[in-house]
Length: 82
Image (cartoon, rainbow, N blue to C red; front, side, top):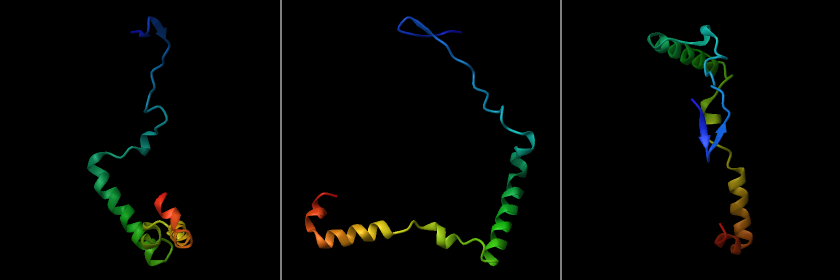
């Protein structure tokens, strides 16, 4: 098979998506539920030890937004630009 564009042959190579994948990294669908349950249990244990918190990371920082609001208070002309 040859790829052509405007009468010119285009060189190509087939990309093997599984080439860099280790067999032990693949989890069968029938085991996926138990793997996800194990991960959830690990996360809960980390949260109990205060090593992981969803609340802190679930929302982005609003520092930039607060700065823009302060700038608009100082200069109302900026409000029409954004």
